[in-house]
Length: 209
Image (cartoon, rainbow, N blue to C red; front, side):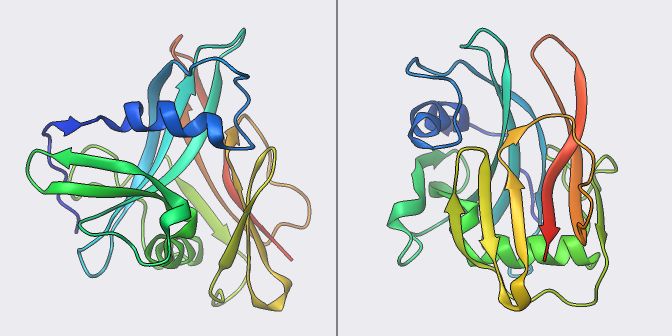
């Protein structure tokens, strides 16, 4: 069980993402500086208790219309070997000291726990409260065991993770209301809140073959 520390972060997560998001091909804010607000998300537990895992939803109000993004992040107490390209930035945590924040799509711990969530072996945890299940996150899977995912590739709308047996897990980086597509064999869905208070529900990830 991950313990959530309510303490200081320098820089904050939103400050890190303000610099990082415009470098992503799926960011839709144009050439301006993002104006970010926390919109929701959930956490997963690392069975070893070493890596923080968070699926953060953020809203950007810098454009004509607010946009919401899903940013899976991992937080580590030391650099992840071979993942320099996935580093979002470093933070000083008021309790844990220096933390390395990574795009979780390139972190094997997050990928393993995301597969466990889809299979129903673990439950999504509240983003802000320790040892509390997030009841707004739902999942489904028409299968038994998922193979290991690898090779995260970004495009203009999301990130695709491929696995054996022709399976593709697509993370919906740009969030919006959506139904489960025909032919999907698994998914994760949840909710987020836009800056004007509107609560939206949609897909976070879709598994297809």
